Picture 1: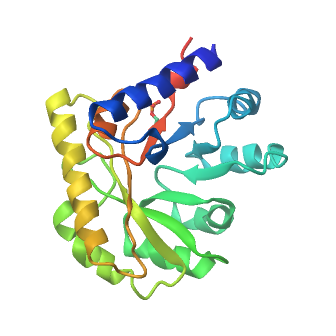
Picture 2: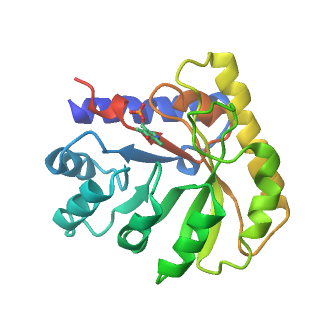
Amino acid sequence: MISDNLRKVEQEIRDSCALVSRQPKDVTLIAVTKTVDTETTIELVQQGVTHLAENRMEKFLEKKEKMSAFSNVSWHFIGNLQRRKVKSVINEIDFFHALDSIKLASEIQKRATKKINCFVELNISGEESKHGIPPKELETFIQQLEPYDQICVVGLMTMAPFDSTIEEQHQLFAHLKTLQEDIERKKLPFAPCTETSMGMSNDFAIAIQEGATFVRVGTALFKE
Ligand SMILES: *Cc1c(COP(=O)(O)O)cnc(C)c1O
C-alpha cells in the first residue's frame, strides 16, 4: 500500500534526522513517479506529497497536464535532458536536477521564459556511465554560469554508484555537502547553492545523515 510505504519513508526521514540532530522540515521528500501511472501519482499527492519528479519528457508533460488541478505540486525533472527537448520541458518545471554542461546551460538560457532553479549534477564516483561534472571542474563551471541570467544554481546533485558500500555512500554524500558549502560560502547572487539533492530509496537515510536537503525516492514508495 502506498500510504504504508509513504509513512515508512517519512518515519525513516525523521529517524535519520534525529540521528544527527537535524529538523525533518529541512529535508524535502521528492517522490520519483517515473515508474507509475497518473492515477498512482495522484494517490500519492492525496496522501500529502507535494514534490514529484519525472525523467522522460513525454510522460512528464502528459502527467502534468492530467494533474493540472493539483496546483500545489512542485515538479522536478531528474536525469538527462536532451538539448532538443529543453524548449518543451524547461518552463513547465520548478526544479531541474541535471545541469552538467555549458551547452545545456545556453539552451536553457535561450528557451527559459522565467528563472529556472537548477541543481548542478556532480559525478563524484568517477564512474564513466554517470552524468555530471567532476568535482575538480565545479568552481570553473559555476563561474561560467554567471552570464546566464535565467539560471539560478540552487544546489548540487549527485547519485551514489548502485553497488557502493554504506561507508562509500557516507563519503560520497559528505563530499557533495562539502562542495555545496564551498560554493554557498562565496555568496554568488546567481548561485546561492544552499541545497543538496542526494539519496534514493537505497541510501536516502545515509544522505540525510550527511546533510541532504532534497531526497529523491521512487521504489520505496511504490513497492508491493
Ligand atoms: C529513478 C531515480 C531516482 C529514484 O530511484 P529509486 O531507487 O527508485 O528510489 C532518484 N534519482 C534519479 C536521478 C533517478 O533517475
